[in-house]
Amino acid sequence: MKKFLGLTIALLLSLSNTVLAQSVAVPVGQQGAASQNIERPTRGSTKSQVSNRFGDPSQQFAAIGQPAISRWVYNKFTVYFEDDYVIHSVLHP
Image 1 (cartoon, one colour):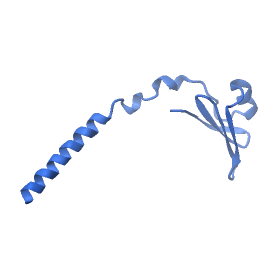
Image 2 (cartoon, rainbow, N blue to C red):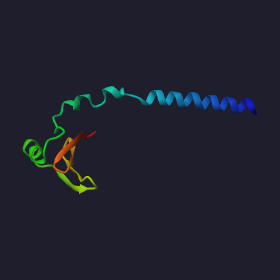
Image 3 (spheres, rainbow, N blue to C red):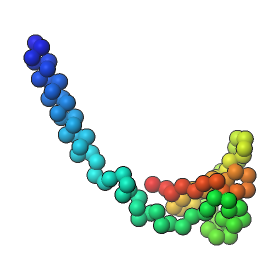
Image 4 (cartoon, rainbow, N blue to C red):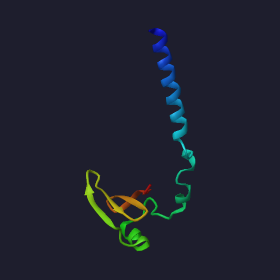
């Protein structure tokens, strides 16, 4: 019985290693490399500067929390504001 259990565990482990090794198709460092050059707002820009440069967002979410954080969603990225200033912009996957 121990021998059977040991062989079963060994088989399962070998199968799981095979599946994990085959599931990685693109190295993490290369994911989204083509999108990295998309221009987006920089930290410290004001809402009016973002609006003038990138136009109206497709969605605007009102400020919540303390400090007040709002976000504007554009086609390829989302911009996060603290009060009137950009704190971060994130590319969409």
